[in-house]
Image (cartoon, rainbow, N blue to C red; front, side, top):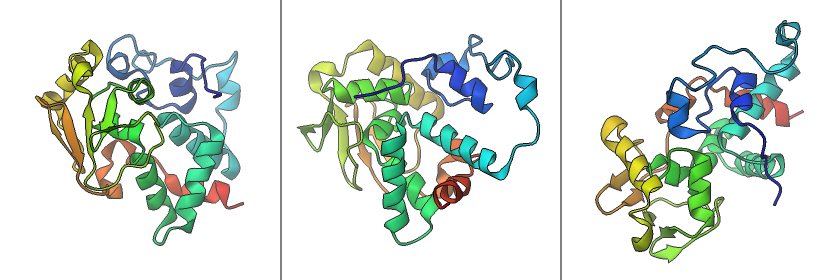
Length: 211
C-alpha cells in the first residue's frame, strides 16, 4: 500500500501547526515548531502572502488529512460517507475520523502518535472485543472494548505511552484501565470535546470537496 515516507516534521512546518506526528518528540525541545522554524522551501516568505479561498480550503484539508495519517483516496471516501449521513457534514466527518481504530488506540494512550498506533494495529497487537483486528481503518462502535494482547502489554512503547494517562487523562468518550491495558469506546465524540482540533476548520474541507 502506498504511504508517505518523507520527513514528517516538514508537514508541521508547512501547516504552521503541531500535528503530533512524532508523539513525545513533538513536546520536546527537538521539535522544529518549538524552534520557530519557518515553512519549508527555499524562500517561504514569497508564499506567505494573502491566500485565495481555494488555497485556504486546500491547506485545511491537508492539515486534517496529515494529522490522521491518511492518503487522499481514503480521506475522500470518509468525507463522502459523512456527506451521506444525517446532521452536520463537518461534525460527522470528524466523528468518523475519530472512530478509526488506529486513532482510538492513540486516544487510549497505547501509543504516543497515530503513526505508532497504526503500527501496533498492523502488527496484530490490538484486540477489539477479544478478537484480533489488524485493519487501522476499522470503524469502532460505541461499547467496543479495545485492548492490547496479553503478550504485548509489556512492550516498552505501550508502557511508555500509558504514562500519559496519569499526566493528561483521556478524552471524554474513551475509558481506559491502565493496569489491564484495556479500554472502552464509551460514546460518540461531540465536536467540542475534540479539544486538540478546536482550531481546525472542517467547514473549509466541506467547501473544498463541494466544488
